[in-house]
Length: 404
Ligand code: SF4
Ligand code: SF4
Image: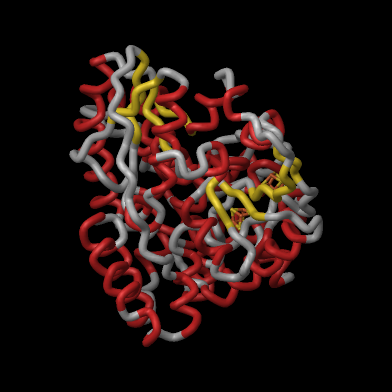
């Protein structure tokens, strides 16, 4: 597409990047058909092609309105459009640039600013989040029903395996998962231990930076990314074979470190090294002999592939092949490419849309009458669980039930 971006923007690296991405779009509209927000709202401006037009218009006119920001905010950053696009348009990077510019021009309503500020000040901090979660668990019966459904029951935390092995990985535990579902990382460490791989951890880093980066607290987010890099690089020097995450959203974010710090002369190379060493745990397990974990009796389940796994990391089918290999029968899921509505903090910032997407997803997942639903990301897990009585579990805990 032709562009006429204003010179002030075009003289910046992000302006040039946006221009390149805009020019790679040929307007075909294939992406629109697979966009969850377009499917729900039926408005071209709530689909990828419409949002691309809005960003182009804003960068050419140097103007944005509250409506521009609303349409950009309703995007889930699910990247289904990137999977569909035949021209390889890097929509997610363009959308981030577009949102940053729109936020500089349009002030959000007071309530939204407060909510976003609270999310940025609580979610990335493990201790703060654990405190508020414990408070919520204690006073759960007094809370509104919708909120009650989002608060998981208190968990007994089993201990991590302590056996040392020559093969080692560094596990990034993240911010909310250790408090909400500690059993996931314990199961993963147990699995790896059985396979002769030691799980190392570090207290020096917590959130991967996704919360701040996606809520446009860019400076805080990038500083967190730099601190993580400083904390994790020594492990690579010690010879860990990979940095892993059991949350597909965190794995994707860390794989993006090289992109996020590409313009930082002090960190660009280090960030690329961290990204190249990062793997979703499914990538590690896929190459291992998993026959000790085979089921004695087949079990019918439905698997929801998070967008960060299938569209972001492009690992569609990997977890599914592991689960079927060890004996799970996967029930068919219609429109498996669609987001469940969790999308990081989206379920808090856009609750009505998030609930509709969740209910559509749950209907698609349960048509084959599975015994339970499995997924690969903590956010999707708890968001879906808030809408169904059927158990929603992380797929790793299906491989290591009640062992650690
Ligand atoms: S990222 Fe998802 S919600 Fe956003 S435009 Fe693309 S397909 Fe639609
Ligand atoms: S983003 Fe890709 S699929 Fe969508 S209109 Fe542009 S070229 Fe077509």
